[in-house]
Length: 449
Image (cartoon, rainbow, N blue to C red):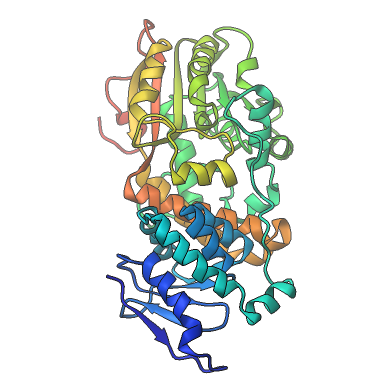
């Protein structure tokens, strides 16, 4: 049972009677919570949750947050309040995210809800809170919400979904991504590698897996800001073509290609993967952090398209996020991601992804799990974003900063816990002679044969 104690308040005294509704609500909502925290209220009073040094302080600036949570009992309403500034976290954000698992287990009877809503209404009727609300101190509207997406994955809706996430601001992403501007998990040879080093290692690892050789044609589906196509051309001598649905990524990538003098070897265009033409045009195909956007119903079309444009004897590297259950079922995580971050994103388990590849005519050659690498990457991104907070606020505003900070920190915890994974799956067209050596030794420099 959670132990709750009031922390002495040095300012204006208020009777315990005024605190009684809050104590009743907190006692019920935090029943079974084992963490150590402080709950700081809008009137500067505070409650200690369990004994010992607190891991974080939860700052509640608006009692209406309680009303919404009691009515709907979903942690997504708390995320919504955090984005608005009605709820805040001081201290360790990762420890505070343990509240997600706690609140997912909170089940309120209708009697509980009626009693608690009455108490919450009493709190929101206090004179002090009304003065705060009237002064405009509390923002109650979340502007960055994805609306109108129904997972239909038409060309129009896919382009709109990509724009919602990736066209936020090139300069915003530049504040916390690495120098190559890679927006997928890095590859850490040691936990102490810098993010820039780990992302260069990741680009090189992909190129080695694809066994790129000079003069080959590489297609990168969902090429982002052009990191992989530029790396492959500069360091492996290929002719690389990338496609994206993001206007801002396209503009940045083309400018970078020109700055590097790679116009004769690298090209990027705005194109949906379904509109790729031709057959057997590419020696190698990569897709990194893209199939999450395809939609489960469209996965066969995506894989058949790759199979069609890849020449016999070529290689396909399919890199993406998965989760630990089949299908994209309704969960708190799904609601949060689709509402605030990736409007039409859908995940599946890795075994289903591989099965889909095999049904499309691919032979699986190699599978590598990178879950721990993504957890490390996300913690780097969160730290770098927090260090650039002032610049981020100038570029995209408070709400967008908070969305990305919470999203990436929550994802780091999810990857660490194993509920979400990420895999690189290397495949070739079935029936063709294997393009790979007998061992993986060539992937790792310095390995003795």
